[in-house]
Length: 178
Image 1 (tube, rainbow, N blue to C red):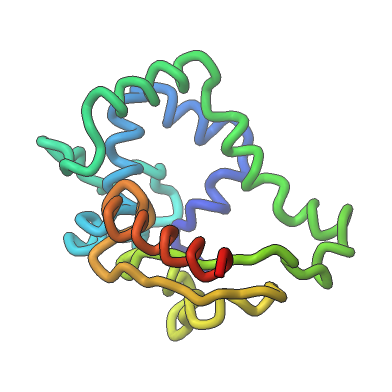
Image 2: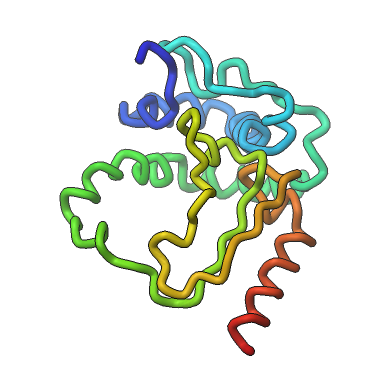
């Protein structure tokens, strides 16, 4: 309470869109950096005033970390110029509504073979102080084949650690083939 939390900030329709769409390239650079291992190591946190914008206090890294090319980033920018940020932000705006409209999902299990890959420096991992959200990722899976935590990666694990991610997926597929 009294602190900025991005998911609450996203609830006010139009506010986040205005901030993010003002300069899409800078917005994406900051967001990708914020959730990356580099951002984690540099202590880029959302420990800011409740009246802040999402991008306040997040550096715009130059050069950008090597795991995301300028070419890929420019492609993302062009797509967001066409679509805007409303669609992705609406996902956050409907989380509570989902639980009311489809409560049966709370008891369902994932019944296909599953495997979890996450970055050790992903801010989502310890989203709530003292809790590790990666501790039991197979809780809702009937055919869970384990997890791989890539310690050097952040939220964008497949971009930040492509070789390790690919190896983890390959090992998982070998297990379910066997």
